[in-house]
Amino acid sequence: MTEKNRQITALEGLLAGFLLLGFGWLAGCAARVAPRPPAPHGVDVHVAPDTGLRQLRVEACSRGVTRYRRWATPWTRVTVEEGAREGDVLRASARGCVAYRVALQASRSTLLGNDAVVSAQSEWLLRPVGQVDEVRVRFALPEGLRVATPWPALVDQHDAPQDTRGRHVSAASADTPGTPETDAEGAAFVLPSLALQLPSDVLFGRFELSRRVVGVTELQVARVAGPLPHGQEELVTHIARAVELVASVGGAFPSERVLAVVWPSPSDQPVQFGLTKRGGGASILLFFGENAAAGSLADDWVTVHELAHLLHPLVPSADRWLTEGIATYYQEVLRARAGWKTPAVAWTRIIEGFEAGRRGGTGRSLRDEALGMHQSAAYTRVYWGGAAFVLAADLQLRARGSSFDEAIARCLREVQRSARPVSAQELVRALDPQLLVLAEEYAARSEWAPTDALLSELGLVYADGAVQFVDAPGSDVRDAIMRGSTGASRQRVVE
Image 1 (cartoon, helix red, strand yellow):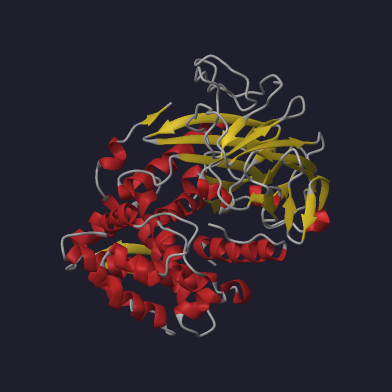
Image 2 (tube, rainbow, N blue to C red):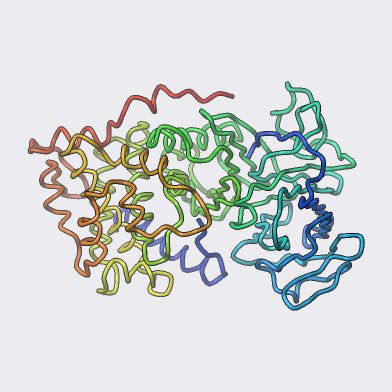
């Protein structure tokens, strides 16, 4: 079994394991917002985790909002302390507040550790019903604990820098990793509108935190305690470079804020698994292998794959073949452009991925395979079948003087990001309307796509586990795909 197939098999098993545990597919250092007087329909939320990180007390008060609706957590894990429950809604008391405790439980959106907990706000926040002008969330944290979110931070009118406990610090120390002192107020954030519609990761507990600005994106890297062969600086630089690579596709990274949570995992792979969320800022949960070799981060494809999911909007389940195809294609292409892998290795991995996709699946159309892939485990068929479409589309676009990179940039400009899923047809139309026929052909295919002809056109010959480059009509295109533009290498990571 080749190394590529071993990783594919491991990924399939990992996905199945996460699904059995309830982990579903979802798909930062923050700009600080000065507080304003309470809006008529503003909500102030106070969140207090207990010292064991297994329970949160939440209080929400407002002058205009009187009802709060359950999001993801069942009422059986909610203990109401103030307000009156009416069906699936909690009505505020006479003073305009609700208060309740939520017992955290391992689920698709909550990961419980000894030193830290990752829990999406959908697990503990009741959403206000009706018009909402602004939601401000403050965390009151026990001594020695901190919080990280991808939401913009709220500070006082002097706009002084804040650390993750809400304590005002000097500009020089604001980006210094470590655990700050306890503060009476705790960290405070403004919830973007998408944070009331889509989940995002919130990390509580003891962890190391670093911040960088990458282009126009503010990146936080939070490392939970555990043995890893990589130091914090190495991890931050690696993730920042992955952000930079994804930004090079569309000209700028598609999110102003990114929270990357590094969670140690018992694996010998550099990164075993990843999950991306986009509720009011991007968050990415990355399971780094505790047993990976030192210096192996160049072999990590998961981080680029997960970040590349931010290049497209949400899509319905049946259209995941397209978005997983985009992320899978760019996980190889971008790493070659960065020099993490040679073009020959990148093409080898693509060809081996195509072969795994050819063997995978249940004989249904690519669209139907995507719809049922969590039940059938047809991941390689969906991911690499989608990547085959992206390669075919890239070649078609380049024949017309464009590229898939340019199509992504156009899509980022024209498709508004929201909680509403965008169909594959809408997404492809935004990429390039002339790709619609090709996309429908691939989506409807029950047999494997004609990738052999595409690879031959590019002058790629695979034998004995490696690829050879030969002269062919598409040799220049083959090299241009892995070379990309020079913008990615020029973009500087600013600390």
